[in-house]
Image (tube, rainbow, N blue to C red):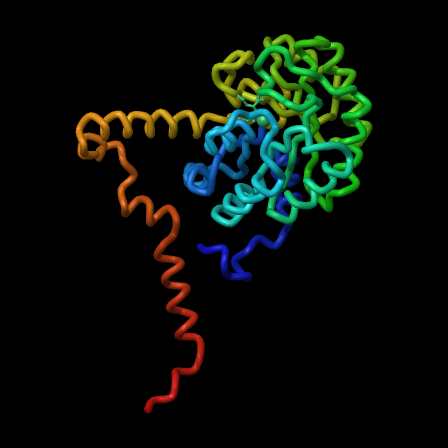
Amino acid sequence: MTYLVAADLPRETAGSRFRALLNSPGILRLPGAHNGQAALQAKAAGFEGLYLSGAAMTASMGLPDLGIITVDEVAFFIRQIARATGLPLLVDGDTGYGEALNVMHMVRVFEEAGAGAVHLEDQLLPKKCGHLNDKKLASAYDMAAKVAAAARARRDLVIVARTDAAASEGIEGTIARAKLYTEAGADAIFPEALTSIEMFRAVRAALPGVKLLANMTEFGRTPALTAQEFQDLGYDMVIWPVSSLRVANKAQHKLYQVLARDGATTAMLPEMQTRAELYHLIGLNDFEALDSSIALSIPPAPVG
Ligand SMILES: C[C@](O)(C(=O)O)[C@H](CC(=O)O)C(=O)O
Ligand SMILES: [Mg+2]
């Protein structure tokens, strides 16, 4: 299947398809896919929705996750994932790249690029990974204004409000902010960097009926729980934001070490995606068959 034939494209918008997944039974499992290739591999494994992580995206660019990159740079990643897979995608919108009007611009650009959902966080720039120390929190009201702005700008993009308040304002601050952001128009809440199962339970209990996202990033502050365990805690979505990049990076690191040592890649062949596997995944045959079918669909050129 290619993204080039109108009749093959999904009829519903990415936002409504994301919402339908969110409203269907069971926790929505959203593995991080840091580019189109990773997204295709996640789709082949059976995932129905994906997550585009700011941390993984910036790391893949060789940059720290401090909110430096721009809306258009993120749109480049959204487009490749949406084209390659057609799957609904939750995108990390960081702090929205500014204030209300910037947030609105981000929502329009992300929606046009093919995103199904976005999350916005209540940090000040330079923002940080939620699992690091010394984050600077925005005022709850400034963040609520951004959520309201996002809700005004979207057609049907799902708006997820993330709060980083747990470290500085505790569970009470997290819950109070979550309530405010929900009133401002958020469709779901992402309580970031909760450090215990009790905290996950407390947030769930305080926000009946509100959709909740859990972040199962590795090497962070959240204890390692499975998708089933988050579902049993009453959570509606779970992300594994950086996992694909961490694994890919480690493999790449090994390749360069071996190549520098041996002057050849031979020792790495068993660990490589083969040419055939690569072409199969990206659908090379489908694109070539499409090209041939176009030539066959028009009257032949006159002879002589
Ligand atoms: C979810 C997150 O915002 C991301 O960009 O993927 C990061 C993940 C990470 O750095 O491990 C986060 O702030 O938790
Ligand atoms: Mg992020």
